[in-house]
Length: 245
Image 1 (cartoon, rainbow, N blue to C red):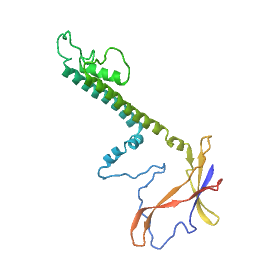
Image 2 (cartoon, rainbow, N blue to C red):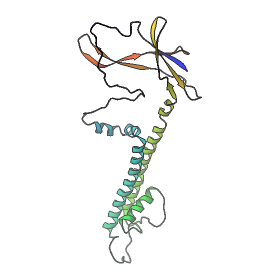
Image 3 (cartoon, helix red, strand yellow):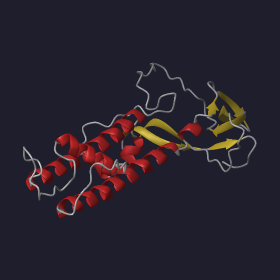
């Protein structure tokens, strides 16, 4: 395991003063597992902002929500276009009760109910093609709707497939095979106090051109007396076996 050092100042860690009491415990900004405990609340239009960046929003979804959205999207498109096909058949007079007129050609063959229209929409979108239901040349509106359905649903499939691949390709799982030591040591090296931690790569594949960076969050008071609760200071790392920071 490689030891990683963080350069610190040579001043004492704790300076005791007379009458100094213990600071009140405050909730952690980051959990020990690396997750942020900060919650964004009371922001106007936050959901609209998420919708404007729909790609990132869908990628950041948990798998259970993503699979639910995936299934619901297809079922809704099947049903929506099925209702439109049913309305076209109704307007054309294909759903009249009784025996059909001898010279009457329906818009969609074998579609005489909402269930039949839903099945035709499903078969068309998934290109199953059972061969029982088909569009005739009688209704240009139905032909145009079929083309629109195939184009729209193809774009939806591309978007959903892309988000699935992007989420799978994220290096999050790879990061889980990099383990940090549970304990850290503060010691002197070259006359300076350093925080030493150990990092282990659990896989056989090597990590090349890795960059180590860190942030120290602390309360800071400016010269003007302004109190900054989350002042961020950059922390430099270096590895024992490497000269790079």
